[in-house]
Length: 119
Image (cartoon, rainbow, N blue to C red; front, top):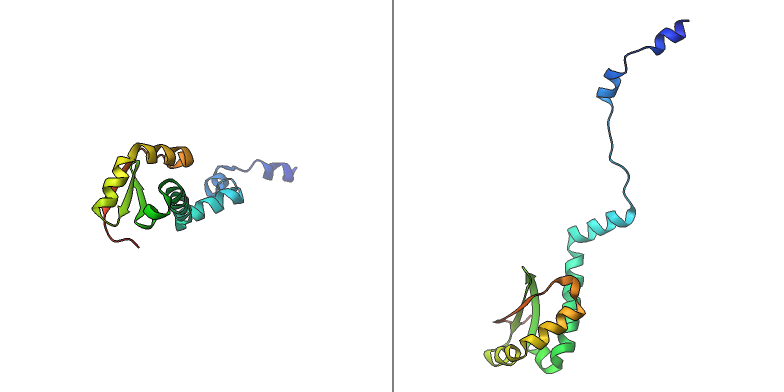
């Protein structure tokens, strides 16, 4: 009978001290978060943009222009001089369509050309 009496212990105190852990996560989810945190996803996106850009503009213009960053849907392209800016500006719609078709996940809606130093 004593065993039965001990079973009637109030568990509210034990529940209050119990540590709740989140459910285990899949390894793929953890790796994805780690890659995003370290910026590897961004470098992969930049490489894809550069490859698509070279295909769209050709070797000559690709040597004088570099797609840089995407902010709020605008892809900034650094160009060597104003002549390249003019030439690319005349092809903006064609280039934008090509980028959007090749990289829809990057959600690029506008192109912006800026004269600057090419790296």
